[in-house]
Amino acid sequence: MTSPAEQLLPGTRRALLHRVATAQAEGRAPSLVAAVQRQGQIVWDGSRSCVDGHAPDSDTQFRIGSLTKTFTAVLVLRLRDEGLLDLADPLEKHLPGTGAGEVTLHQLLGHSAGLGAETTAPWWERTPGSLRPTLADVLGEQIAMHPPGHRHHYSNPGYTLLGSLVEAVRGASWEEVLRREVLKPLGMHRTSPRPQAPHAGGWAVHPWADALLPEPAEDLGLMAPAGQLWSTTADLLRFAAFLAEGDDRVLAAASVEEMKQPSTPPEPGDWDGNYGLGLQLIRRKGRTFIGHTGSLPGFLAALWVSAEDDVAAVVLVNATSGLPIGEVAADLVDIVAEAEPRIPEPWRPLPEVDAELLALTGPWYWATRANVLRLTADRGLELRPVNGQGRGARFTARPDGTWVGLDGYYAGETLRIVRNDDGTVNHLDLGSFVFTREPYDPAAAVPGGVDEEGWRGLGD
Image 1 (spheres, helix red, strand yellow):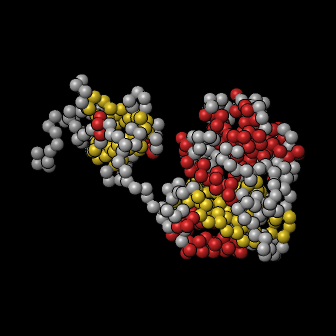
Image 2: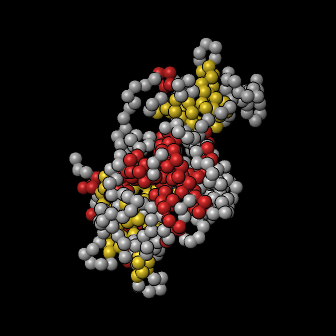
Image 3: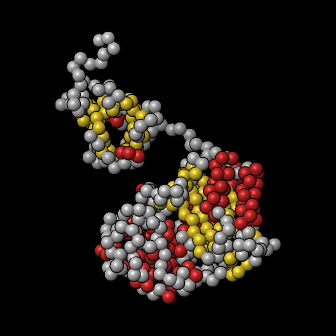
C-alpha cells in the first residue's frame, strides 16, 4: 500500500509550491517555509528564499509568536484534568496578589477576562523581559479594560498570568514544565524558548522599498508564555496531529475537544470565527479551521488544522509584516482538500448491538416536528431532524442510564427514557421536551394533554 505522501498528485504539489512562491514574492519575505500534513503524515514541504541556495527546510527554527499561547493553554488544561484546579476558579485562588484575581481561568484562556491587550510601555515584543521583572510591571495600573466575561478582548498579559499560574501550581518554571509535559512526549525536540541552530534571523522589510532591517530577538521574560517559542514546520505538524486527535500522554481527546469550543461570542466584524481555549477557530469557504497565528518583530507564523479533511498546514516567515500568513496556511489546506478529497473509511457495522437501544431507534416527534434517532458506537445516540431543519445533537451514555448532549442546542442537556409501569417506553424527555412515537401521541405524557377527538380534517 502506498503512503499518503506517495499519493499526493504532481498537480497538487505544484499548486502548493505556486502558492508559497507567490506569497513569498508578493509579500516580499526574506524566506518562507511551509509544510502540509495529511492522515498524520507530512505529504509536502517547500520553501522560498531571497538568497539562492539558502532556503530554509523543515528543521529550520522560526519564532512562532502567539502560537505559544496554545501550548500554555494545554498546560493549564493538564492541571485541570489532574484535579489541581477548576477553570471556574478565580485566579486569586492559585496566584494571589496580581490585582486581577477576580477573573477566572476560563476567562483568561478565552481572552474574555477584560484585561488589556498589551503590557505597559515600552513595547514588550521588542524590548527585554528584564524591563518587566514582576507581574505588576506587566499589568500596570489600568488592569481591567472591560468587565470580566462580557466580551472577547485579546490579551497578551492574560497569558503571562496563566504561565505564572502554571509555575505556581507545578513549582517549576514554565519552560521546564512545557518541555517535560508537552514537547518531550510529542517528540518536539526542535521547539525551544530560545533559538537553536539552524534558525532564521528576523527581518523588517521597508514598506516602500526593497530594503531590509534586522529585528532584535529579545527574551520576553514573564511574557514568554504569550509568545516566546521557536519551532520548525516538522515539529509544529506533530503538534497539529495532537490538536486533531489528542494524545493521552499530554491531554486526552475530550479535553482537546473542549479547547475547540467557542468560549465567547466573536467581536462583530473582526473575523469569521471565534476563540476557544488557547485556539483560534475560523470558518472559511465552508471549512472549519482550528489552530493559531503568531507574530513577533521579524517573524510570522500560522498553523491550521481541518479535522473534517484530516489536513493540516504550517507556514513560517521571517518578516515583521507584509504577508497574510493565516490566509496562506489556510490556502494550503484548501488546495489539498479540494484537489484530493479525503477518502472516507469503509462502512462497518457495530461490533455488537444492544437490543434495548436498537428498539429506541427510528422516528420520534417533538410536537409535530419529525426527528430520527440513530444508534452510534459506544452506546451513543444521535437525534437529528428529518428535514435537516431544527435542533439535533449527539449524546453519550452516562452510568445512570441517561445520556448527555455533546453539541448544538442540547449540549450538556440530559436525555431520559420515560417508561410506563409495564416497562414499555412512553416517551423521551430531553431537557423537558417530550418526544413521542407519533405526533402528539395520546398514549404519551404530552404536556398540556391531547384533544380527545384527535386529528381532524377541515370539515370535521
